[in-house]
Structures are given as C-alpha cells and as structure tokens.
Length: 164
Ligand SMILES: Nc1nc2c([nH]c(=O)n2[C@H]2C[C@H](O)[C@@H](COP(=O)(O)OP(=O)(O)OP(=O)(O)O)O2)c(=O)[nH]1
Image (tube, rainbow, N blue to C red; front, side, top):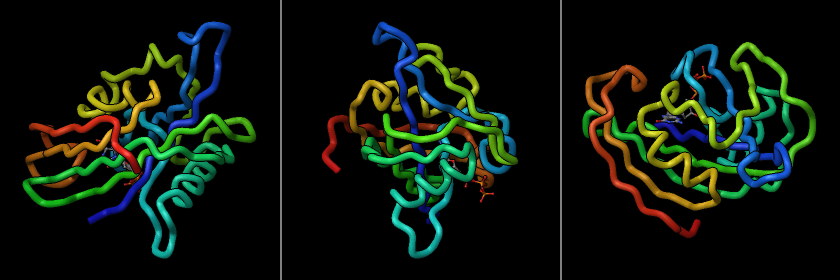
C-alpha cells in the first residue's frame, strides 16, 4: 500500500473570513495530472508523513511550511484492496512565495471557489470540512483497475471530529 500526504496551506485573503485562501496546485504530471489538489505525494522510506508533507510542498511549490496540523486520514481502496493511505495536513505557517515547478502550477484560491469539478471525485466530500478546520477519517472505494485516477469512485464512509 502506498503511504502519501497532502498539505493545504491557508492564508487570509482579505478582511472577511469568507476571503480565506488555500494554496492548491494544478498537477502537471503523474497521478491526478491536470486536476487541482493540495501539494503532496508519496512518503519515502524512513520519512514520517509530516516530513513528507513538508518536503513535497517545498519540492512542488517552493513553500517552506511549518506547524502542520493533522486534519485527516484517507484510505483509498481499489477493487477491494488497500491502495493508498493519505495523511492530510493544513497549516497557516509558511515562508516564501509559491513558484511553478515541473510537477505543479500553484495558485491561491478563495476557499469558497475551490474548483471541485476539476478535482478527484471524493474531494467534495471531505475537503470543505478540512478547510473549515474539522478533522476527518474516510474510506473511499474505487473500481475499475489501475491507475487509480481512471477508476470509478463508487462509495465511501466518513467520520468527522476524529482525534489524531
Ligand atoms: N485530493 C486527493 N488526493 C488524492 C486522492 N487519491 C490520491 O492518491 N491522492 C493523492 C495522494 C498523493 O498526494 C497524490 C499521488 O501521489 P504523487 O503525486 O506522488 O503521485 P505521482 O504518480 O505523481 O508520483 P511521483 O511521480 O510524483 O512520484 O495524490 C484523492 O482521491 N483525492
């Protein structure tokens, strides 16, 4: 099973709470290519998920994130078998300016305008809550064989307010 991470940096975009923004990437290659997501990727051996999220965010968008808050654990099953376990973080602490890399076009996007129609099908179920500050554990079942991003999302279970 693949162990992976996602990181969602947040900032105030204006005066109102409604103006909050999240740093998303448009993924330029690999799994989920062409879709929006948070920075993140697969954990390397010997690396904690938190270290992975920090490294991937630096590699993909050049942002040095810190004080990561664990927001979710997502289990993706493909054809009944465990495929990916993804640790989700959010943070308001970062240094630097996002920059384009070979893997990602970064973009600050108002939390109310997240383009769920250009993301993984399951994201609409858990990402709004994560961006509101909730914690979540989810299982998402896909069918149709590899690669995961071409399989069909069939059903899910979600639990909110989980302690990590
Ligand atoms: N938002 C969201 N992210 C997902 C879902 N499923 C899933 O694997 N991911 C994430 C976990 C990882 O952060 C990312 C896939 O890992 P990756 O970016 O390293 O994959 P890749 O094939 O590009 O690998 P690499 O070439 O960079 O090594 O996609 C999903 O349903 N929603």
